[in-house]
Image 1 (cartoon, rainbow, N blue to C red):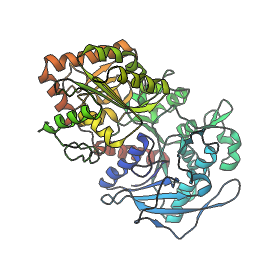
Image 2 (spheres, helix red, strand yellow):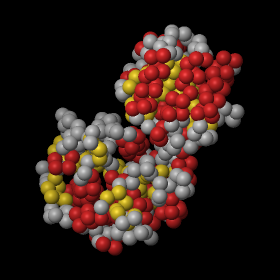
Image 3 (cartoon, rainbow, N blue to C red):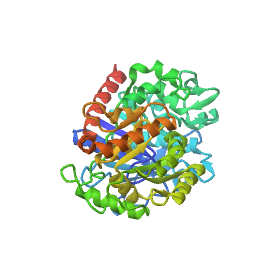
Length: 485
């Protein structure tokens, strides 16, 4: 099949979250399965033209309510091995700024125009390339207008057989704008209705995509169930229940080349499930890096995360004193976010320098060392559509301690079950998290064989994109059947 990915970010070129990782990895797995896959993204100001990039000579004409606008199209590949074509839409007025969605002042005030333009430009680029896809796979609110366009302005002619698949990576961010942007989009007025783009008098792009897409996916089966409920639906649970027959969850994989402990150049020492010697070396280096007491027998609990309410690190901040004063464990935290959480962990590190280490900010090499050198990995998220951190941790022999939600519940098998890989707790309460932490410490101290079994199960777990690609291939077939009747 011919498949076009439309996304505001794609790893490793431009990235703000897990969406970029999906768009950077899934197309390669699909191409390996025999599909003709291409990816299109805005050329943000942070992108630098590589020597292998080519700027197409043809002008990209993009119709808008303010007349036709003229853009350029750059062409390269996702990587040298997969050779998946990657296109960047260049239009300086909207995309020359470095940030994707927001700057220090908040969200860009013209995000509605920027991404309405990009959605239209992505489709018009196919005319320029003389390549009409069977499926357009779009992602999150920024591309929410694409399925609406395919059902209206692109319903007939060469696009009449093109289906849309819409993936929700995070339902919380929906793209709510004034209906004044309707004139710019050139969409017919009838799409601004309750079973479409309208939500409390405003435009909701994600809601429009839910109603107009042929098939809808989320990034884990449990999250697909959670978002159909009032507590997890962020106001869109009614629409998702209505379209429930077209909604399913497909678990994200991870890039097994970028996250491979046996070859990872950022670790300082390598290891594998058959030889864990290097993990001890990475652990010792991690203790030195954070100024902790260098003790191979002391378990390290690692955190690599944004410090926001969703991630539940406030639960950990509430119990860090108990952890530090127990004398039975160490904690390292890498992340940034809400100021009070940053200060809480920094102050804990100042009070307990031998058992708590904190790095405020982000450092890619250090993130690999934290994940590789930790014995346990803490992710107490209030909600987590899929989660990559716990999957990286298992691959690196760090045993996850997670809340039973979204993709965390789908990837971590709890202690006590066959093929167990980690620890789960149910409610977002500090005492539940602390119970699992001390359970993990007890197993570390009294059942080293169980620790080894958990590690081996996690490291040998299938986290490849090939499995996900097979499931998406089936969804694409269903979407095309729905589109073409």
